[in-house]
Image (cartoon, rainbow, N blue to C red; front, side, top):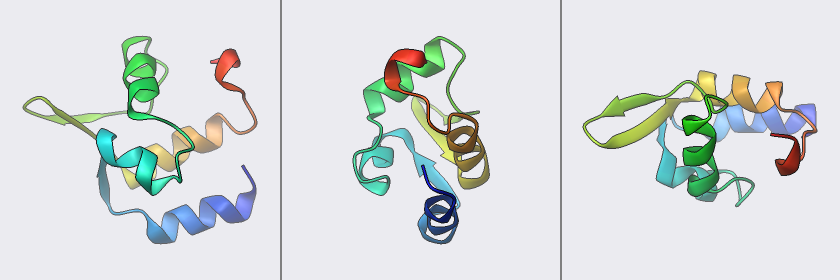
Length: 76
């Protein structure tokens, strides 16, 4: 992802986003199911939970996206 895209995400994402909102907020870049799988593997962004709901802070989600920069789905 291009550096300007991260800056755009920092401006447009809400402070806390639910896992189910991620596909819509990222233009379908990553699915909620893929995030759930990565969470199970310990490879997803740091998560917060409220009951059965899973979410991410904007800062943690963007930091995780930056750390994955350029990796394909097959790479993890």
